[in-house]
Amino acid sequence: MPELIGERELSKLRWRCRRGLLENDLFIERFFTRHADEGISVTQAEGLTILMDLADNDLLDLLLRRKEPSGEIDTAAVRGVLADLRT
Image 1 (tube, rainbow, N blue to C red):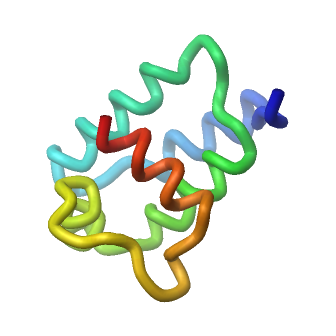
Image 2 (tube, rainbow, N blue to C red):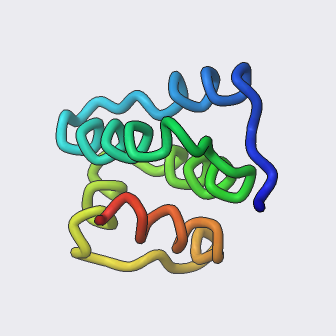
């Protein structure tokens, strides 16, 4: 079983994931709802943190599959969270 983040880290992550575009918020809120019972792993938190450093429109392009991660954000953690966010 993967290592899960604690309640404090989860609270900070949820706050960090608030976005300016409603469309992004809908994807992200669905992710948190889906993982409410099982928790969020350290790897998932890492991927989300990297994605939250993107501009809203760049994040939306990734979520809608208009583009794929590349460069320094092309990590296993990002790809895993992105796949989960897209479903």
